[in-house]
Amino acid sequence: MRFDLRAPGATAEQRAELHRTAIEMARFGDEHGCSSIVLSEHHCSDDGYLPSPITLAAAVAAVTESVPIVVGATLLPLHEPARLAEDLITLDHISRGRAMTVLGLGYRPEEYELHGVDYADRAKVADRKLEHLLELLRGADGSGAPPRVTPAPFSSPIPTLAWGGRSRAAARRAGRNGIGFFAQTDAPGLQEAYVSAAEAAGHEPGLCILPSPDTPFIVFVDDDVDRGWDEVGAALLVDAESYRSWSDAAGTTEGTASLSAATTVDDLRAAEASHRVVTKEGARRIVAEHGILGLHPLCGGLDPEVGWRYLRNAVDALGA
Image (cartoon, rainbow, N blue to C red; front, side):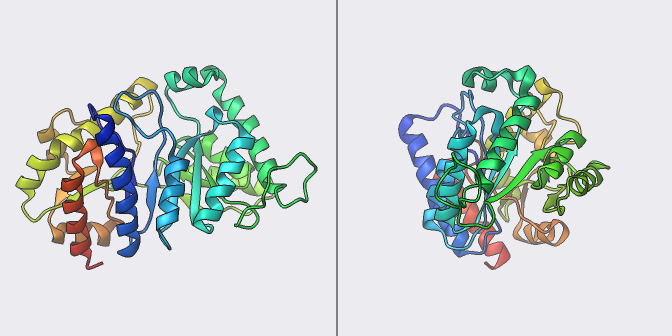
């Protein structure tokens, strides 16, 4: 289940309700076998896209017991490593080790401008900050030379980290730093680049996730599919168009999982790709084929009451 809290035109009261509802939905998902809660980060977005996922992740961790929590992705060059290390350790304790943070570069210059970081040097900044972050986390048990962050993490040796991206450079960055790799696609050569870089640096290759662009990432369940598209289609299009416009501007659209080229609700429906409305039987087929059912119950600022109904439909479909 994913939350980004994108909600064009929402009032302050509506936005507060979306935050609260996301936490409540996460608790519901935890109680009904949800495979993960994913929280994303972006800045300078007029639709209120979640800028502080670690904060929301801590709130989710406090009301859940077993569901894994994924912060993906945190834009590392925009963060100060010591502060980020402390936040990750705090989240690690609240979640009792259930949280994984996917770090990444990002691809929007305005986000860098907001944080006073040179976009042109983002790769160099990322390498420097990742090295520092890992030094701080790995020395948090007191074995490293001071100064160090405290307390030690709940997880040993450090909270679960991965690097996200779609390039071989991203795969190599993950490998040589001894963390996991969470790709945006399953392009040839990515896994090999990750494994090779890890082994060359003396690390055991870890988690390597390579999502297929064919996987439906946002699914709503309604046995009346026409009614479903009428009700949630506009919200799905908000998601599709927003991500595509950002990716088009950055030149990162081709081959990236979860992106759609649709410009109308009808196009989005006809594509039968990343964004779907399916029957309960259709939901079960997606799980059988892809292993997951991607839920985004507050997608595009959808009214929480509507989102709850579709979330419960999905739970009923899977017998959870």
